[in-house]
Image (cartoon, rainbow, N blue to C red):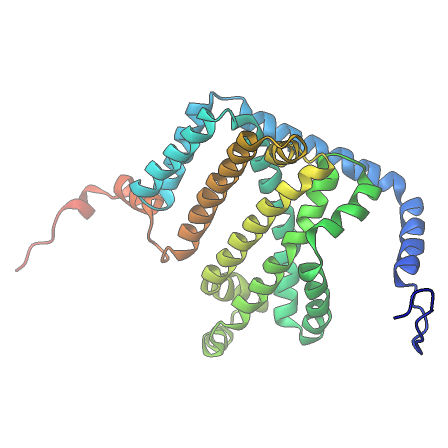
Length: 309
């Protein structure tokens, strides 16, 4: 194009961003007090949980995490988890790692509390499914950095805005995989439940959700992974934890700090991934917790082998 000329186009300008900004400003001015109260609540919850995680000695909590890994899977995951946590302690990243863990856990709980009921609703209503599908597409494909802008305007710089952005970014898998898991339940099993007089709520609780558990846990796993990735990005808006360490390393070109924070993120991600994957892959009635319960609740008659006549 020749310099100084104006390109010819028949498409009129579309001020989509300006219209969105106008509506968003009205929304913020109208509900500003409510967002301040929500932000204070979120800050208190995450700060309290982070302080709880930081209260014990790091090595003691690392052993607790290892025991949890053994209970849901096996000794190999327990040993790997303990070694990973000791590495975080040795790199002096324990406190930031626990802040990130607190943010991820709280954001995951919020995402699941919102996402699972929406997924159940979508599985039972084709109309709701058609409405939610483009919304979930929009939330999932929008770059994570973009979500930081509106939440910072609403909640300000800090943990509250970081958590809300994390929930928005991590929510779609909870909705999608909950809906998918329930829809994949064999219709003949559901019909059998109806034939035996089970109501809609009982079928959901006793048939659909238990059979859809592996898919549901895959959704939980994806929510946790997305929340962890977004929690690091949220360090740009004062989200705290390992995200702040990564941002600090970038701003000061501190390679050692960047690798320490990055390796800590990797260890947390592997620990949470293996933990949730193990819970989802366990067959009903199996696992260390069930084995221990059966061992200590069997009666003497149960332990006596039956005689063959």
